Image (cartoon, rainbow, N blue to C red; front, side, top):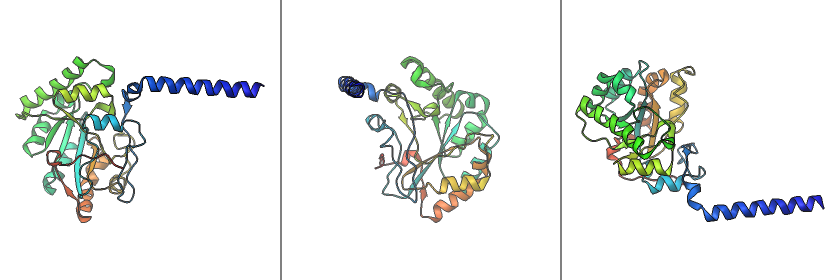
Length: 264
């Protein structure tokens, strides 16, 4: 009898949970979410189908992939603070004639104005990474708008860059509300389909490791996330670019992205 009672109790709980989900389907899509994806292996497309937030990303037109029918790559860098390697990264991009976008915080803009000016002077895009790098799912819509506007204004004052239309949510944390508010403010949220744990400055493993991590994930339409605080990235970037081109890939600016897709 005890087993039967426990079984009935379990069924009852499952029924109640199912009813709650059915009554509040939007709650399941509200977030917050931490961006993640199934990595590309052997040139196959990555996927966000199993992460639970694909519908939210699609709803707001956020970028995860480019045109997956073309061998195009999009280099993106997150710049929360300077660790001495951004100049080297810019040198490589200039030598190789590769466009990129740098997502900057308020701290970076204030601390490294000359580097921000160099980014735009050399033809790169500067994107928004928020003023104080908060979890934007935990602040109000007005605070989100203020975070974004302060970065845009300061970059414009420094560089003359009038438009700022790309946003990378700090730490990859987002929600339906964050995407909605930022979209209303004129932003396309940019996630990624190639990444590795490069941001930990105490866990650098050499240029070869960085090279292998990135090259192993290359696929058509890839949006590549790198952090300029990584010594490994700065050392490996030239070789990564050369190998990608050897494989037939072309590097493009986000402004040249014609198709946004979301994997299989």
